[in-house]
Image (tube, rainbow, N blue to C red; front, top):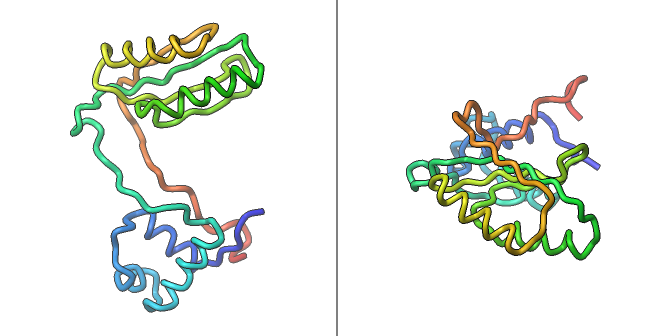
Length: 161
């Protein structure tokens, strides 16, 4: 069940998504409140599981991770043991930024960030040496058109909850 958020909660969350390093005073000023109510609302949203954690976003290319691949995986194996081995292998690889199980012809999609094609090949070889897959297709992202970690938290239709 979704958390019940009012307009002030949503404004606070929007500010935190924009820059979580802001002080409570800065956030309060931008959302039209004072520090204590903002702090209390943030605490309650953490306790409710709306705010999971705060982190820092890094620039991949500045760290030499210039290649982003989307890896499409098809498998003929659907047993729980295979799936557990696959999940363990994927979760252990720091190159995998995202992994999703899909409906349709493709079973899994991975977002993989590496330095170059040679580094991708090393990742691929390590992955298939640990888990048997039916087919792997790697798609190189030529240009990142949009990237955000901000969730759309606009007011629901009909106003405040």
